Length: 273
Image 1 (cartoon, rainbow, N blue to C red):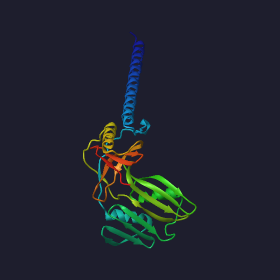
Image 2 (cartoon, one colour):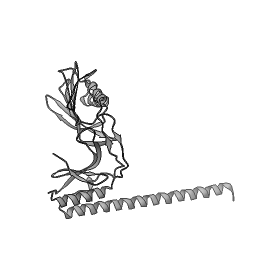
Image 3 (cartoon, rainbow, N blue to C red):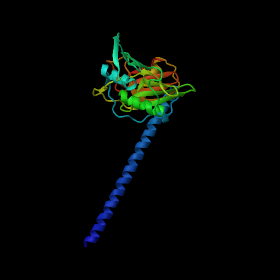
Image 4 (cartoon, one colour):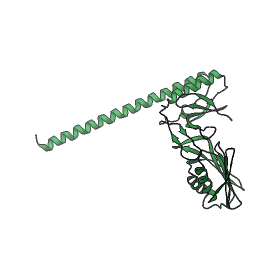
């Protein structure tokens, strides 16, 4: 057989194999999608049986492995955060877990629970460019990863609220507020955990279905009058103070408040308002 004919046959066979593999991949993808939809419908039916409204569209994607992160209070990190807005600062006091830095541009106070307030003197930190761009640059200089989650604007002021993130996942209840006048920063305050946040442990995150079933069982067993799940998202639960851990959780938002489900143990805790 001539080589040209043999080559043509080989090309046809390879093309046929490619088509078969592509068809198989599409079939498996569709099968997986149908199984996923069926599982979502089953979850919705279980919640409906307990009179809890739950839309499968609120389900987040299954997340990758999230590990707890240690938090260690670091004077250098706090000084860096203060200097990002106030220039060269000097530590002026440290009492009962509260550390204060000052400069000719203002003062910054940091507490052991992660809360802080940076207050410039009038006009000492002028606005350069847009408020959002300036705030994002300050956050980088402070050593913080954060995303804009809320904006409030009046004729007199603009407030931008950023939520701290770790590996693109939110740290719930850890936010930074920038308050601007028309031409300067008025204050920067909030609660966050500065410095290097080190992941640790070998925990295996449970599946989303397992977490939601545990939530359902615990909530219905406790007698909480939950009648609707409004949102679901992954993230980290902040500790009460430095020295604790950022714990990976699923946040379940409901008509009566938020719940946190630990990703590795499925332990349920209701958020304190």
